[in-house]
Image (cartoon, rainbow, N blue to C red):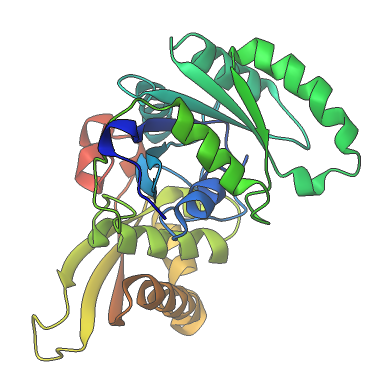
Length: 306
């Protein structure tokens, strides 16, 4: 197959916007073909701006996943996540608004207003169409929400099932500027292995802890030794500290006889081994950092960047 000439290729940045739990991270992973962003059933799983890269012969899409736009303002961290999502719309080429096809909320209205006012070309994606019993309602929804968001094109996908993903890829590429790729063809993210390791631990905190406890936790990578850097040339060593905001939560994270922490560590380690294609030795500590979520000026210390 003849490869397109560089002057006919498309390349650009796409901000992925939407409220919590519409499946933005699942969509990012499906588009990229790798597990770039962690995914759980709990809202506000994504706390950071995360970049995934999709490369095709026709061009390259640099996707920027964002925290879900939400109404909670009770902690500095929540306000920070909303700012990160809103600021991502500045300096990108295209806005991708993701809605849950099965239901919409007031937070979707806010997300639609944000993209309508950003001055960008907007593509609207209805995700989770596999949950619909009657797909006849999609076209009326598309007309309604296209008007609200100022969208120029609409796609209907199931990120979970992989339905219509390639159609979306091609639709995004054609809307991006003409230009050479920004990244190597085999590169699927710009995030560091340290960052990805911390996220995989946090994913297991969300999956294995109940109610509000995991929202008061974050993960710091204290030490990251890659293959061949120490005595074991075949594996990696990672030392991670789980921060909790309250003393009573420390015992809950550790669990009776250390069983909860052990389960979190085992599952995170297996996920790391799959992603990094390496044997991993993971050590977890738990430390109380009172009210860390409310220290707006210190959030950067915990890895929350603007």
